[in-house]
Amino acid sequence: MPIIEFMTYPDHRGGLTVCELPFDVKRAFWIENVPPGETRGGHAMKTCRMVMVALRGRLDVVVDEERHRLDSPRTGLYVKPTARRTLENFSPDALCLVLASEHFDEDDYT
Image 1 (cartoon, helix red, strand yellow):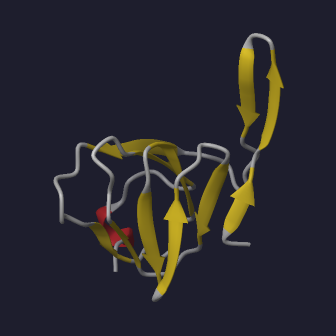
Image 2 (cartoon, one colour; image 1 turned 135 degrees about the vertical axis):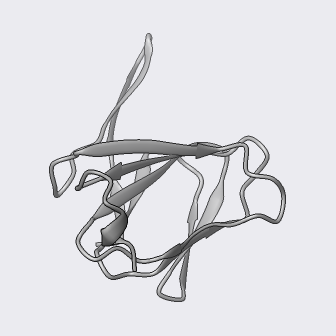
């Protein structure tokens, strides 16, 4: 279940997108203003599950050597614990939201 499709409800006022996740969110953070050619991540987590969403722009996420393009706020990429992830190829306007199942713990990084 790597890609999660979110439900979107459009009407004359705009769209409302609902994100229901397979875990309780304990932490949220976002990545923006990544210079051309730079990458983020490059590690795995021992216990933390994550869903990554491109709220604006586009980026690629490589998870255990499988590439996923994120370019819509209507889909998210589920990343399981122990999966090595690298975020790359950010468009200049990219804004990536990450919803995590655990609070920050430096010892969770591998």
